[in-house]
Length: 328
Image (tube, rainbow, N blue to C red):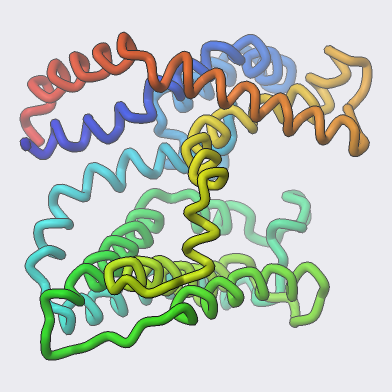
């Protein structure tokens, strides 16, 4: 498959739904932008969102449908995969481990520079108001810049390939059991709980992600794969592969796409007061919000994502655009 066609086929798996949700909620997005910044700002933000280029503008990465900044990074990261994956596929385990360590450092060093230069070692960025952040632009670049996210995604590909080589490498027998998934899973939950309950000193969110969360998550995924291949009874994997959770897993993408705009309808002051006269606070409204997101996700999944006409349109566009992007 030509690299541009492979890339476009992946991108068009999420582009159509992204455009649909932008279209459905565009009156709300435009109203907010025009109110606070005028029509020019609304036009620029709309262009960034529609083209999924907002992640390259760290201070504006969360315009319109905020969570889709990640899709913006994914567009770039996916474009790199046809060049990265063949190299990774040729590596042995020693080379993969070395590559993983370098990628870990590539992710970590900019974070250390940010924490050192601005003394943010103990800053809980997620809880810090933007106006009180000592280096907001630098922090936003660390969060959103597609270059940093690409390095993290390639590190995930390296980890997957490392686990895949187990069955081909007779010289190295990897020991795996139920603890291979349980230990990193408990670690992931434990660090979240410990931070929430102030059981550990305050540490920068970026440091926790790069040094603790990402390595533990990769260990968990590798352990789940190894246990499945080895046929080892793994209670945690069994629970996570239950019919209910698999069904919810199938809805994660539409939930991801729609939960932000619906959240604005309920909780963004400008929008909520315009629609309802107040921000919809309280547990009853929160459960209503969750229900609205779930119903919307199910409708999008059944009526749009699984629609044959949408699938055929996407395939045609991939074919057309792959010819135009042949220079890749």
